[in-house]
Image (cartoon, rainbow, N blue to C red; front, top):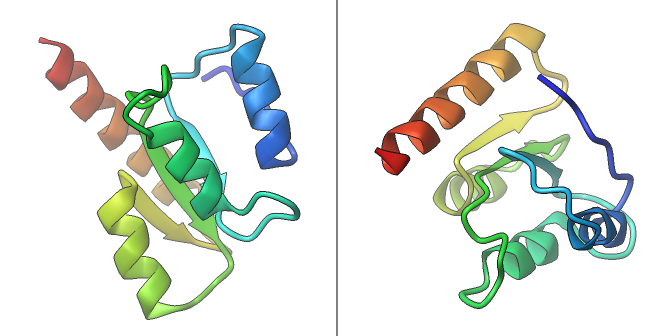
Length: 103
């Protein structure tokens, strides 16, 4: 995989506006400035050109409400610390589902 990093929601949107369009986004919920929920809502807005990009939430928040909402709104929800193979498997599943939707 090719990885492009962004340290904030604002930086994420700057990269997208410059033409970067990732196959998926790994999104932390707890970030300074624009939190992950706000980034998600902006990405998934009906008029957004990015609303087809799947999102996997990554977070250190060990909170059942976050887990429920995260799996409802995102393609997956992974708590930190996580096993790298769990992350890889999640990415593989999400990208497979995305490819199946294109067919």
